[in-house]
Amino acid sequence: MSGDPRRALPKMDVVLAHPRIAEQMSSWGRPLMTEMTRRALEQARQGVAEGRALPSLDDIARTAARSVASLTAGRLRAVINATGVVLHTNLGRAPLCAAAREAVNTATGYSTVEFDLRTGGRGRRGATANALLRELTGAPGALAVNNAAAALFLALGVLARDREVLVSRGELVEIGGEFRVPAIMEAAGVKLVEVGSTNRTHLADYANAISERTALLMVVHPSNYRIEGFTAQPSLTDLVHLARKAGIPLLHDIGSGLLRGHMGDEPTLEESLAAGADLAVFSGDKLFGGPQAGLVVGRSDLVERLSRHPIARAVRIDKLTLAALEATLQTHLSGRLEELPVWRMLTLPLGDVRSRAERMVQALGEAASLGEGASVAGGGSLPGEGMPSVLVQIDPRPVTETAVMARLRAEDLPVIARAERGRVVVDLRTVFPDQDEILLRSLRRAIGH
Image 1 (cartoon, rainbow, N blue to C red):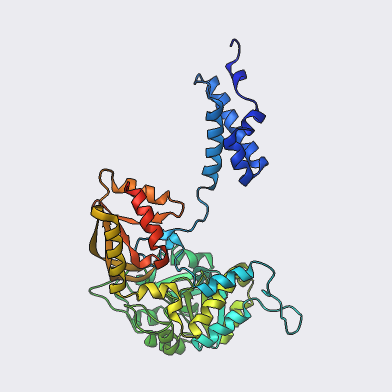
Image 2 (spheres, rainbow, N blue to C red):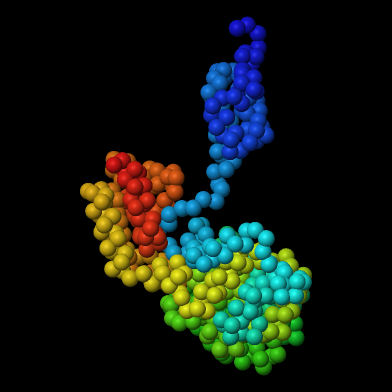
């Protein structure tokens, strides 16, 4: 053909009629597929003008289809968590219990998020969740917002804006995603006053730093790291007494949301309130086992100030999270902790993990073997603490462990595993038992069975 070779490119309607485009059009609609096809044709025209070969109709359709796939590659999808990290931040932390999932489904339609069925008038968002939270913790005041960082931001902005807040240098944590406590404090409009040193802070350090500009004394649990060795930190009770003597509130960020009991070095909400903390802040989606939320409990007058501030409107909880939180609170109040997936996984007997791992190794054959290892809580909880586990270890040869893990991620229900010493490792502690057969089939395909 003489003349401009770009004239040989197919027309728009011809590409749109291609089976590959027509198939995606049923899911994504004509406008989006038309735009992606236009871009693919423009890319082809530019390539031909630069001297590259004329692409075929199939090539152009493939380019348009891949553009749609790339656009949606990062969408939320369910996965099998075979990493052994219970509160895996990148996988959404705490899986919701059945009651919470059902509550979310109910709330997707019209729901009484701000409607009072008794009076027929407007209700207060979160009133039930706040009441349940007060009942569960025994605190006189309670408030739920959309995450723990927002709860901290709200408390600081309301109680200490344009004033000073004392924090130990050893507690200036980075909470993930490069968000740091000092940055949150700066954004809230408060002045950080560091006291003590990284490894040793004494009561006198706090006492000497208190001035007429001091608005709060803040204690932050370093939930994602641990300082060991030559260390010192005053007790929470002593800090509360100091704050009371100075006439300022004490804000305690306990982090992971362990209500009571003993789990590693995690502080509990029960201990915080018993020591006299004026406000305590914690996450809803860590050891509490619920949705992402920031939960504030403590003095009713302080909580009321927080709830009525304009910032509270900006960080308020949405109706789906609220529904999941109410159900999780009810599960805690009923004492049915075994219904929370996080607690089932954290307390799963080693023998149960071993028996499931043995069955999987037997089914996989020579490529698989048992190994001893450890699961971790993750998600900024129980730093340095591990739980003994039994691992399924898979020899990836003749390919690499990277290739096998890529195949697992490409499954219809993607599998997220980990690699150790040239092997693919699966920890069944974080795999729901009803996923074992699905996981087994995925592993067989990935290793070429």
